[in-house]
Length: 281
Image 1 (cartoon, rainbow, N blue to C red):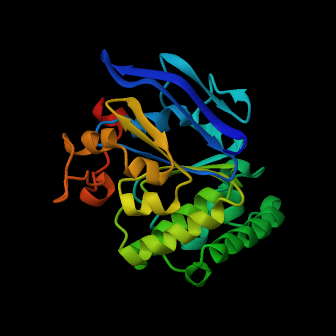
Image 2: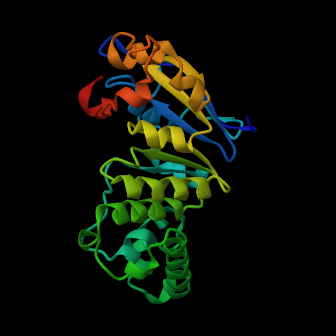
């Protein structure tokens, strides 16, 4: 593995006395794609929320670029070099695609996004530079030709690209992707996989996803959670062959006609859980 970019060490989180995460540890290296998978309620979104500062762990620590994150808040992420996409797309329908992407840089602007968006005198230079950057980001993601359209007029797969472009406007060194393949067709997932492979040249990527074919095609390593505990960490092929992972997804090992275990990747595509902040799980 490359040098650790993100280190999660022994993190434990409880809600109403129930453990959502129990002594969870993982690492993401520079220019590495790590996928976090597991059945419903496994704690995947809770872990994302710990990294982002929405949830404070009862025990354990999180380090980013060698610095412990003890009191950080979600508003600090962009300044630190962390970007996160949310489930769905969460684009503003009243703004154009270009303006949505520009909004991703609001935390880095001196004059503020509103001033830059409307080209007020004190921000004219910054607004010009921001529009140029947003166009370049859309071009990188293959969406510059829809810059002036509104998100609702676009296919869902293209909206996903716009949402990622918006996240990338802070020039992150760590990108957190929350179910990026959700709602995409097989062809769109293939395009997204190519995109993620391209991003890893500039950043580390940690993603939560339930489309196992997508996960196995893009991941350098896979971490499996079940009931808040890490039950497996390894290369995609190692995770495919792990009987404990099969049991976690299906409840019991599944065998083929020749009595060999069937990969959980081939036999099931679990659905991701809702946010623990909302559900308490």
